[in-house]
Length: 347
Ligand SMILES: [Zn+2]
Ligand SMILES: [Zn+2]
Image (tube, rainbow, N blue to C red; front, side, top):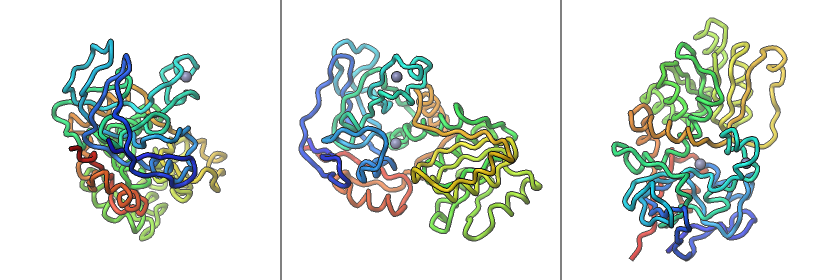
């Protein structure tokens, strides 16, 4: 079968290659890939500038939905034909403090699908049955392919931030993660402002259609002035920073209220100039956010199934895997929302 393979560690070094079809080991399931999403981190794997361990040659890709086609020895909880998604933490130690307390996303031994183990930009993949979740019948294949990024959003919102239904929240950055973050927060009633720049005008319009109370183009109007006006000078209760840009982080901290919550979801440059004065004067609660935990997958599927998070319009570019290069280039230029790739035609 064909696969998109990162075949050597240096930047680039990715191409379509012929790889053997995998067989499920005991305890694993073999899944036929139906729809695959391109993640920002796939670009980082291409560029070889990601801190998560990568083991080339490896089939890339980790966001997907699929159908079980074969069960490894001892797997009884699933059957052939089940529509499923899989967590991306292929293996972790199970013994460190993080693992013992259910935070395996932070395990130093964690090895990830599409980084260390062959991923899903291909026709078939194998994963441990313990990572697999059934897709509710009313969730379509493309929406289900966004379960992974939505689980990361659920981790940031439910596990790492404190948001009340009465809060006003700033979501900085209207990319797929920002648009999902806004909807997860809207699902329990808090009001959301989404901010972006000139290139984001279409995404800001989509944010309004999907439930954002306010959108702000920070190149057209002052974020600080608008938020002062909306909060009588107090500042927003929570900032969810989804852009990963220094500007997004620093302007977010400036409009955060005293003792507010600030959670970083966006991944940008490893070192930036940082408005550290906010720590001295505001006593903010600041958290990072990395990946997701098992419970977040159930939350994500639940929100999709109940129609609380709509992702169909976010997943607005759909291409065959043969056109991955075009897709990666367009994704890099932000020419589209979430990119969905469909597996190679097989004869
Ligand atoms: Zn991802
Ligand atoms: Zn561990």
